[in-house]
Length: 110
Length: 115
Image (cartoon, rainbow over all chains, first blue to last red):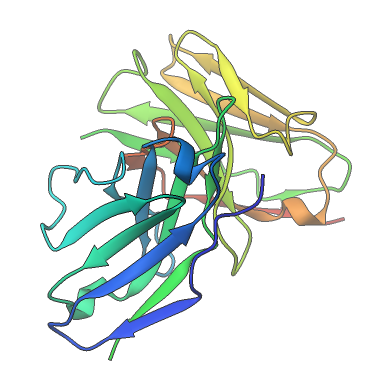
């Protein structure tokens, strides 16, 4: 059960859109529509941003959206804002009642 | 608003057992799943396992031989035990509600394995 692959860093200017990818295999991301995304600011607990690939919890900005194609899931942040600067982690169901996280991506707002 | 609070064991000696509890307030422990997730300093998140309020638990295969979770519905808390700890188990340990879509989290507690 290896960590899902995410780019180490992604950056964008305020107002732009960025996409963070999360690549796994057919045993995890590709095999189930159970992918979630978390935002983590320094020294804070993670916050659920997306669940079940593309669903947004109550209170999460519409600027955050999720999708999946094959073995790769994606998180898109539109209208990038300074407060979006944080680490982002994906997580996927990996079968046999287990879950695996991604390696994490640092999003920088230029 | 549901709130979770981890206990604070601080430092644990190598080869000993790490014990943590998570107290849930503002809501009932049933009928939910409850999880433990950890994060070594400067590194990414790792799922440890989850337990249903009935006591049915599932663990990360890489930790299964050393992990045990339990739940106490009368006290609205759940617990984690990790045996034979080593330096690599040093991490911030989070408790959270859910089993893959964790919507409420504790603030996390740093557990250091050191002699």
